[in-house]
Length: 230
Image (cartoon, rainbow, N blue to C red):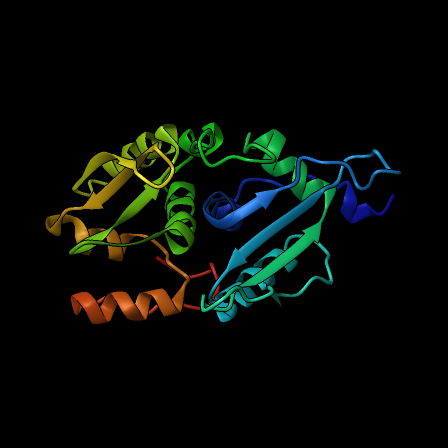
């Protein structure tokens, strides 16, 4: 076994950010390698529209583990936007996500929550986790910003983190008529937008450009990586 396959990965600003990304737009395999090979498949996949942002995510991951994986285009469906995916396999990172953080493998949309380790960590870890979650799964909500999720627990946990940072927001619930399922949302109130934008280390530059354009927000410029200084 190679050294990097048994490396113990710790919860840092970078790995907290990536955990937010994977909860937002990632998938952790819950299957075996093949019909003939029943050993666990340590596959992790992140699927996004923004290729440049996915390249940034890929570079972050390569600072933590060794992988040759690169973003690739998904087969385009109808008139939908071209999407890109990053797929890699690494036992250490897989175990960090599923065992250390307790992120569910397989279908997670309705059962995922903010990891207990994140909730019990210093503010810096929580900041980066929230940034990763919003950079992937957050966006515009009517005349503001916010999150939507199929997980009641994730919605509640995210709301509690925002409260810790004093970010004014509201929560709501509705039935998705297409799926006849309950969904949950968070909306940043107008009084909390500036604090939300200025206190979290967002890395998705394309999304930030759209946000600045909508709100004319005077946010400080961020670096391309997660090593920005406070």
